[in-house]
Length: 182
Image 1 (tube, helix red, strand yellow):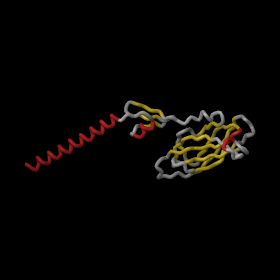
Image 2 (cartoon, helix red, strand yellow; image 1 turned 135 degrees about the vertical axis):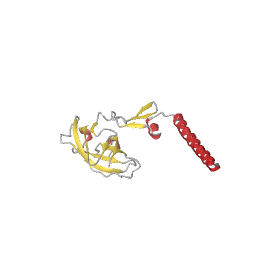
Image 3 (tube, rainbow, N blue to C red; image 1 turned 120 degrees about the vertical axis):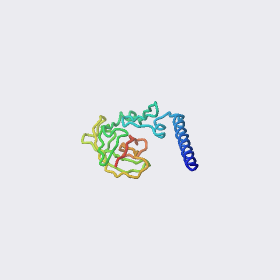
């Protein structure tokens, strides 16, 4: 009989300890103040696969700030893929760029992983007359292999203005975040 009382008391202490632990986790979660999309992800908020992505934590929703391409919209515009889109190999990139972005009807394109390591390179080509100041269509195909064990699947698609002069003043690039799939 006495042994049963010790077992019951032990179980009650364990249940009390578990209750205190769960209550403290709940209080800690409630006391966390989230002010940004990045913090929302860090603390385990629910992320929607919309564009731009949204993260919900409690009763608050945060929208991801996407690098604006509008600063480059007067020179180059990407139709596909979209920012933060899942990309897989082979990746076809399409859009329009002004003729000044090209040299000999092409410009370089690359894909980098989370660490900035180049995992794919290619050349965007146009079939139009590139010696114009108008927008002309381009297409590029990148073949790449992603690291299945990578810490992050985040990557960057980089479309570089071709610069045959080599002068830094003539350099330009459009960088767009993507999610690298396997």
